[in-house]
Image (tube, rainbow, N blue to C red; front, side, top):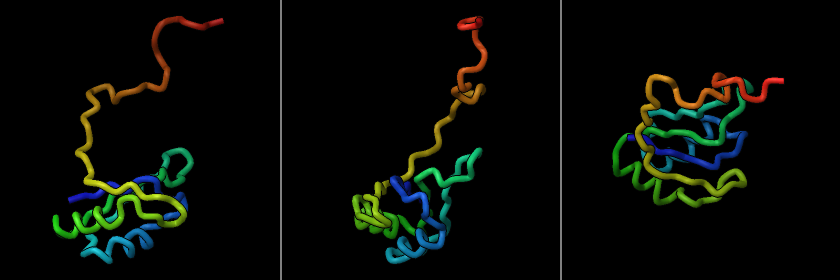
Length: 101
């Protein structure tokens, strides 16, 4: 089971997040995504707890709680959406000859 943790401080570490969630049960894994270009934390994370009961306890206790100067958003993680074979947004590349001067 995985928990989504949003509105995180950009100074968050895996160790600090693990310590907070360990108060509610066993933490199997913590994943803090970073920006590919800058390497900076993106402001959210995923925490995998040992059981559904531990996950529920953590969500109920931490959703809306203030930590590191920010109000956390904590809920069940949703499955990753399939973006199709083209990978979604192409960042504005491609397409006709618009705006060529």
